[in-house]
Image (cartoon, rainbow, N blue to C red; front, side):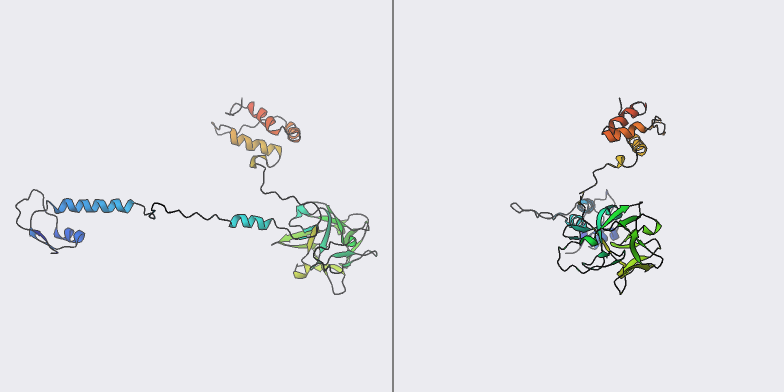
Length: 304
């Protein structure tokens, strides 16, 4: 037992493999003898079977009548999108999250439930706190936001005066027109908002309750919330195609790249005036106009 006998056989048509190979594969010592008519085929069969088993992918045993476990759906991404759409709302007044949402009637909240209050003497102060959760800003705390550029706005109080700053950095509302001192820049960063005046300082409230703009850096005391009462429209996703984004010239190039056959690796764009495309975009026939312009170019395989 434990020994492969090879004695007593006269067959020597196939030479016996070395003893070291047999010992390595079978773990058994080999004694004298020259016949391997049985050992060598057995060795090759075992090696072949081991290679085939190594290629087989192991799976879970499924018996008849067993119900397969349902895969859990990943709700993390959907939950994250829902959290992004949750607004900070008090009554019908919601906190803006970017510059594009600042328009119409707004109010500036400093702290919790306290808003910048316009006085009849042309100054601004911090109003009394609103204790109720759904209490909206009072009429003196409501301002009208006017966009001046892509980064700057003007704010008009209920007294018909524009909010600005004087030479001492005090916020006032005594101007009948918009000048350089009546321009404000909302600064958004990491979900927080600060309002920068024309002197490159951020507004805050001092110990006397006056609204000032004297801090070059924005700290916790300079953090504000601009609330708007405009109707909120939340889009679930951007329905505009990538090819339709941009001006009409860029859109035409995008569609040419999408449909044109580049046999000579040259981009062929219609050189006619693009004013017709602007009119077609307003009339709702933009894609038809693009198709007509591409049909005049021979390299388009989808046009008539």
